[in-house]
Length: 210
Image (tube, rainbow, N blue to C red; front, side, top):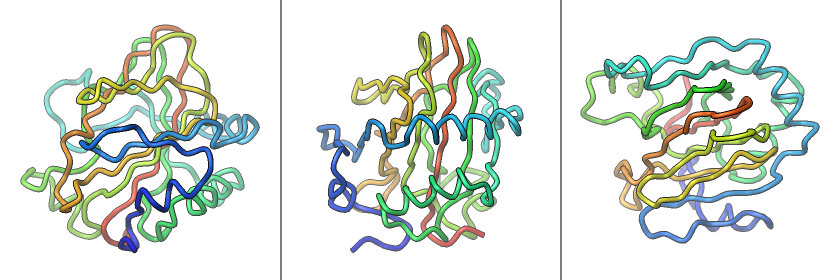
């Protein structure tokens, strides 16, 4: 069994409808129609209500690196609780290891350039972000709407791009089998060319969130 802050391919693939991307470089999965259109629409409303400019944990001097808007969703909202329950049923990760559910909105021209979700262990800000809860283990991302053009998520090492679809889940292990951070998880939230993109992201940690 995995540690409380992580899951496994065996656990995830026990759910019908979830698919693994064939690769030895990283554990990467998708799940079409993970959320119903009705629940996705409720979550879009919550993102729209509380959005603010997104920030970078480690500023790299490129102010166009992440240009989306972000919000932390209220855990008391029924739609948020429903999504959290669905994630737990899928991944069996102890909810205490999860960061607050985050929503993102991308308007035309906005993007999140190629990045990884984990914090670099030798980074200057690593103690600030990881001293209590440890590093990120798994990422679960859900598209809430379809985008007229652009807005895909491209995993550059694999040459694999996921296009936004209502309720579609994409998830991956941020670590290698030996526990080291996996640079093959590098991914790019590509520019929206037409329309709007709404996404939810749930990150899990090595230790309890606090």
